[in-house]
Image (cartoon, rainbow, N blue to C red):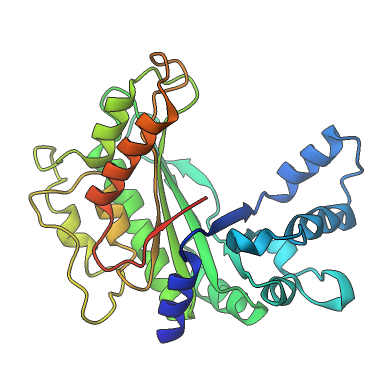
Length: 290
């Protein structure tokens, strides 16, 4: 676990963040086609290699998240992508969720899937050279959403994923994302409220933080995040990652795509900072920056 903790600390080193290059085959192929480039396996490999070999990239990037195909490919000189990244001063990561599926019992909310056979996959990725993993859970802002059911289901999935990562020797990057774009019309304060508001008045939500703690391992000597009186939607999702051995992706509260007029970036940055401080579990090395 010491290696996991040291890798987690290195990923959030001052002035550095993670670069996500984990688009699936269909997504990156569509982008290549749109640019007039044949969407072949070799061209996908060359595109990712051009990205990671950008001069000076390691000065601001600590790790690069890859997809399954790229993690298994070779960069130049016959080196695998994880080995090439290590030589360049960065770590290789892998996205392991299987996308979103409909959550029964809700009004169109989703839950992230991919837990079946996860631990063996994680151990195999570690053997291939991955040092961290990524799992994205999406919560939607709408009247009555996110519901306690959606928060609980995604928190449980994140907790099981984080615990499996730690068993496999990988740093779990926990990414609970509140959807703020698209056709949503909420103002920024509503987004901030969803990130940090107390949820004990909602049916079934009061014990989320309490149930979260046993799921993900915690580093020795760290204290549990928060108490039962405060469990906003994001806090229980983050606390399932365990402290010290996991990392949480931070969100910035912003108005929806069809919401009120946007303000200066500094306003949203300050709101995001307050939300991060209110929801980040104690003992984590720091929030993930992208």
